[in-house]
Image 1 (spheres, rainbow, N blue to C red):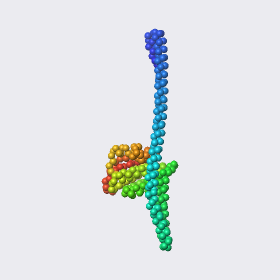
Image 2: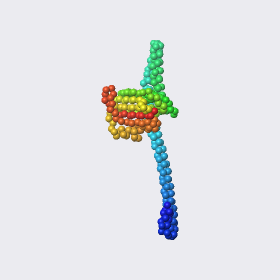
Image 3: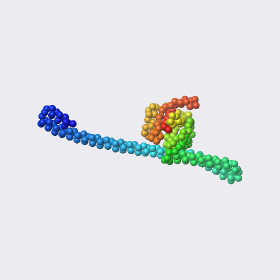
Image 4: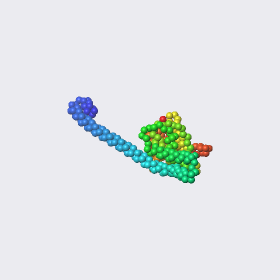
Length: 296
């Protein structure tokens, strides 16, 4: 480029010496120019390569951190659920023990009637089924299937509620549900984890609110090729700053952060939180609403 420019300039002056000098100068400048930009291009290429490697390393580190965080929260939930299991098993086990003792007593006294025997054995069988169902729900939550399956969302919800119902009862929390029968193809444990985190969060906030009448409303329905899931509590006013930071990866919001991650990555859906004023049984209520939307 510079060679041609200098040669053309020298040609205009009709001087061979100037022309030769211009050609040599142009060649030297072109060579230096080419070497400079070649080196700069190589440097930029190396910088881009390093940046790509750094991005890959950062992405791997974030994924590792998320897996570690998910595992830690899973262990925390498992520990909490083991406590629930122990507490939930106590009542049916006591009932089975009492019924068995009464059968032995009646038999010793010779007053055991066949109708009483059948009724008592039926009650024992019912309590045993409750114990078995609790274990099955626990197993689904913490030992998920790798293959996708068809299941009902309301059944997945009640599996989680059965594990948490003692919390609801001990803190006098009323659960109001309106659940359509929605068939889903996917991993049941993913939905159960989401329900678990949201219900535990709402229960905790209601207990801290010290309200006399504690309420959680759950609604599930399908509309325009979307499944909508609403979780609402009457915990009271929540500031905009708290709502804005609900799904951030902090020590206080880790379960909600994991919930949002599961919904975004596993279900390809979205979750939003907002303040809501609503009527429940002719009474004005105010609290927080979590709205989940998943494309069918």
